[in-house]
Amino acid sequence: MFRTSGLIALAALALVVQTAGSAWAQSAPYQAGPSLDLDATVEDAQQEVPRRVVPATGAELFTDPPAEDGGWKALANVLDKLTPSVDTRIPLTPSQITDRIESMINQGRYQEALEVIELRKLQREEQNLMGTDVQLLFLEGRALSESGQGARAIDVYRDMTRDFPELPEPWNNLSAEYVRQNRLDMAEQALQTALTINPNYATAQLNLGIVKLMQANDAFRQAAQLGISEASTLSQQTAQILQP
Image (cartoon, rainbow, N blue to C red; front, top):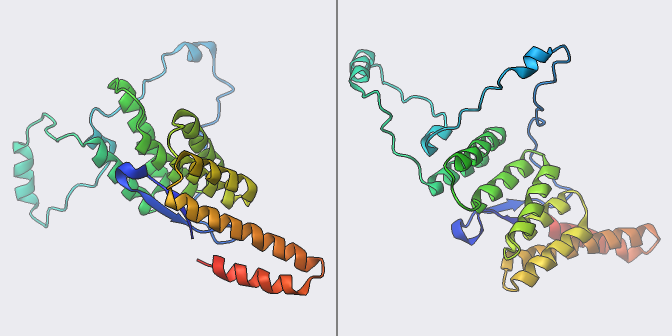
């Protein structure tokens, strides 16, 4: 098993991924935005583009279905009329928001999670919140990875290694994406960097051992193809160790 980090030590979000050669979870391909209208006029271009409405609170990021009324529709209607028009919902805390996004990802609702993450980013900008939500970035990388958008996940993790050089976890997650692409040398380099930042990072040390076993397996297979009989046996043995 190859392990990736989620919300770093702050929230202990651990994601276990399979090694290269295993079946990776895939979802529907990423849908691009609408195509350009080539027949648009100059007047159309001068019209004001509607501004995207950003939810005012964390609670409004999510579109939960209404609770079942259990058949008491008449009573529900009466109570509904007594409900104040002012939104009295308590805003979700940042931790609650990331927990709910994580839950979406665990349920395979990757695109929905990515949409909420984007809204949350806009919300933070509207509210002039200082700093970067690192946990949100980890969730974005994970959602992209598990939805089959590995190239975009790599971009997220690379940006994190640049913006947060003190964190080893982005390097660990980056190595997992390289393993998915069978770029084992780059995966090894990423893990070595993670361990340089934190020599006691156990997950990265474990993953480094797995990568080295995968590299050994490749070498044994190549040796077997060159006619060394015992190399085939060694390749089979390392492949069994790497089975999830």
